[in-house]
Each structure stands twice: as structure tokens, then as C-alpha cells.
Image 1 (cartoon, rainbow, N blue to C red):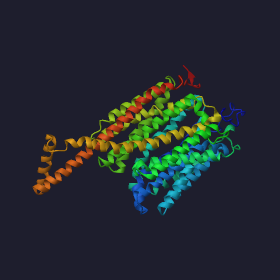
Image 2: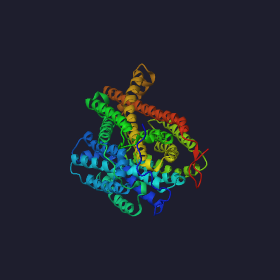
Image 3: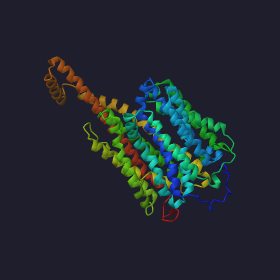
Image 4: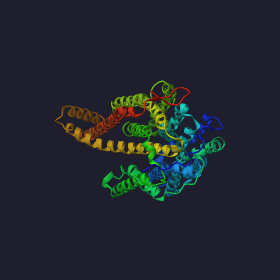
Length: 530
């Protein structure tokens, strides 16, 4: 079976150049993508405030997040098809305008059902921003300059999820949760006018007639929609003990398996999976999936441990992540220069090695860890990320044809977002399960027959008696305090276990980096073979 034909293959591609400054175009389209990526994490911190303001439970309020992720994941996959059907600039501009409008509507919501509907619409239009932003950058810059251009993209992809919790906490604490959505309005308006003025479609990206693959679109919607419900709701519903989660998992499996089978056999599929036949793109997709798994896991774990165990508020928990975002911004230009003289696969291998070592360092976390130590742990993790996104993106698209870039960017972004969601779900579930395991393991020391337990119990009892309690009451309270200590230690050991899982995953990715072609970027030229 041969791959689907790419329309527009006869267009003269060599003579086209953008009319405006490429760097200005890159900044403008990245601004729109940054707004959308930031929105996926900035809302998380505000959910308790949203629930209280709209007279709803926290569990019900999380559907405002789930609805967005479902719609976003589905549209991500078919964004290449939508861009080719409507024209890339027109579709991108529609997404920016409607994302801004739905952000305003989310902030004006008077009840939870309204918010969920508007968030669903926001996800539908937001899903087209990331992949089309990458497509525009790929077409705007020649291969030799894409590494530097992807450095701008990395700010949106890596820094936005890091800054999201911090900015969300500050806005929610100092203003109101509604401003989490209102903040998108001026940014969206600015981006829309700038895109309309600067961005243009190359000949191969203009609107062209394309049939609607209803079967492929339906299977993708079923598979990704149900999978996102499993990932987002599984932890609260106790995973597969819930009939809803079991049903969604079965439907997700049927939908995804059916989608892959159909897309590989259809003559004009909604998504061309044959782009994964390009080795560098396939390896790049695998690498970006692993990076996203680790990135989103760690972005959740450190704020979680700082809030739930150390007692930090949302703003200070977010501030732990912020220096890591600053470090990425400073390191990316350095990585761009290194890419000119070092093979991309060596840089990617170095990045995963640094990340693995950073998580080994993070696994030394203790209940009395200081704020500065948490910041240093996050800085070490961010240092590894800076060596990954730009080299992986550059290598993945190095040999991709222009006609295939729409589907390629859609799949690349899907892998990144989907495995980021999987990373959050897996790490959160592991914290719960490993806490239970560690509690059982530590329980054998929770007995007066164990000397350290007896000594600590006596210390607590005497301290409580000094506060005026009777001996029996003091002994009872001391036992309760000891149980709290045990739970804290068990939880901290669980975070240690998950940090080590991330470390081993990073180390495991190192040899996979050498599946990339042996190429490097030479100044003023395209990537060349070694």
C-alpha cells in the first residue's frame, strides 16, 4: 500500500520567501501558542477558588479542566487537515480570535455548566495553535536557521507550563480566578492583529479542497476523548475500580486501534500516519514524548510536595518553578550555538543524562528541605530540558518534506501533549500507591518495642504534658503525632520513588538518542551528515 498523495507537490517551493522579518513572525505566532500552553496549567491552581465561587464541589470543578483537554487533544490531531482545508493563516487566525473570545466568556461564566461549555470551545480553538505555529516557523525559516527559531518555540513549550502555576497563584490570590481567563484577552487581540499583518501562506499551505474523512475523525474523537477522561479522572475515581473509567478505557482502546487501522488504509485520511515512516521524525516523536512525560510529571510533583507536605501556599509553590524557566531561557541560545559544532544526537543524549542526574539529586528530598534546595533541584531539572526541545525538534523535521509538515507538526504536538498528560496521571497515581506501600513498610517500626519509636513517643508525651494536658491525654496525642510523622515520611519516600522513576526514564532515553541520523547544523547551511 502506498502513502496518500500530497496535494500541491508540483508547486515551486524554492523561490518563496516571507515578505516580513522572519523573527518578527516567529515571535508573533509563538505569542499565540504561549497564551494557549499557559492556559493549560494556569487554571489548575484556581480550581478550588472556581469551585467555591460557583457553588460547586472541587470534583465537579475539575471538569472545566477535563473538557478543555478533551477538545484540545482531538483538534491537535486533525489540525493539519483543518489548516489545509481552510488555509493555514486563515485557520490560525480563526483559532486565535475564537480562543480570545472564549477566554472572555470563561471569565464571565455565572455557573459551572457555562464554564465547562466555554472551556470545551476554548480547547477546540486552542488545539490548532501549537501545531500551526510550528508549521509557520518551519516554512518561514530555512533548515540552517530552524534551530534558533525553535529556541523561541521552546519558550512557549517549556517555560509556559513552568510559569503557569506561579502566575495562576499570584492572579488568584491578588485578584480573582476570573482574571486567569481575562489576561488572555489583550494578548489575543495583539496577536490577532499582528498575525493578520505579518503572517502569509506559502503556495503549498493555501486552502485546497479536501474531502472529510468522517470515519477517521469519529474514531480519533472517540479514542482520544475517552483516553483523556481516563487520564484526567482516573485518580479521583480510583482508576479501574470505577465502572466509568473501565468503560472509557475500553472505548479509548477501540477508538485508537480503529483509528490507526483506518488511517493506514484510507486513501485520503484526515491524518497522514505515513509521516512516521521518516526515521528522524519517528525518533523525534519518541524523544519528545519522553521529555514531555518527565517535564509535566516534575512540574506537578514539586508544587505538590511543597504544598501538601511542606505547607507552602500556591504562590510560593509556583515560585519554586520560576527560576527553572529563567534558566531555560538563558541556556537555549547556548545550546543553539553548540548545535553548530556538535551532532544533534550527542546533545540530546547529554540532555537526558543531565535530566537523569538531576532527578537522582531530587530523590534526596527530605521533610525538612529548604526553599533554596527545592529551587536548586528544579534548576537542575530545567538545565536538562534546555538541551532537549530545540535539538529534538530540529532533528525531527530536518528531512521532512514541506507538504508533510502539517500532519507532522500535528502528530509531534499530540505526542508531546498526550504523554505530558500521561506523565501527570502516572506520577500522581504512583504517589498514592507508593505512599500506601511505604506506610506498610514503616508500620513495623511503629511499635513501643522499637527503641527510636519509644524515645520519640516519650519526648512528645513530655512536651504535650508541659502544655497542661493530663498524662493519658498527652500519651494519646503523642501517638497521633507519631502517626502523622509516619505518614509524612511515607509520602516523602513516595516522592523519592517517583523522582527515581523519572531519573531511570531519562537514563533509558540516552541510547535511544543515537537512533537519530548523524547530522549537525553548520552555520549558513542545512543539517549535514557526519
